Length: 242
Image (cartoon, rainbow, N blue to C red; front, side):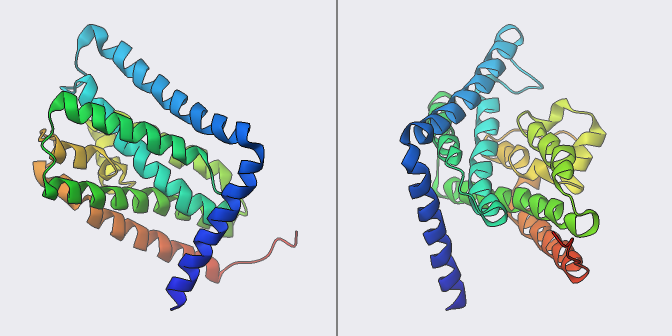
């Protein structure tokens, strides 16, 4: 009952946030359009980059677009859930991320002729949940640092921002050390790269080809660890007096 109550309260807060932002409808629409335009610009940059060489680390444009879209989709869910809880603000720009991702998935599926079996669809949904937990877990850890430093924004730009940028491209193009870090330290490789290799049936140099199947499990484990770090910080919380 308590969980259902909090879920209901969450959606009421989201609804209130959307209604508040709809008071400025032009700005509401333009934030969504702006987000779609920004990600489309990144996709165009990828196309231009691959126009001459055709592939990047054995990945063609459509495979990279799938990788990119999966990263954006899970991040869209992440900012709805975690930024809303931490910043008490529902970001309408996430609708733009969903719109871009859906269009990209449909386009890529047609171009690559992906056979979307029931198993692959269920795996994709599980991967999205895992990706949300991994990215949300890092946000929780970054926020927990405030218990020790009274500041956390700097850690976002040091950890979260670079980690997310890494997910836009296949990890195979990075040095082995970076691949190892994104697999076993800050596991952003499980947000999209490893599961994408499973869906597109691609090889993963330096890692077993089945590693992508562990993405949902890694998401749960990483989030549990982030929760424990949060609780550890909470026990030593001291008000700043402001």
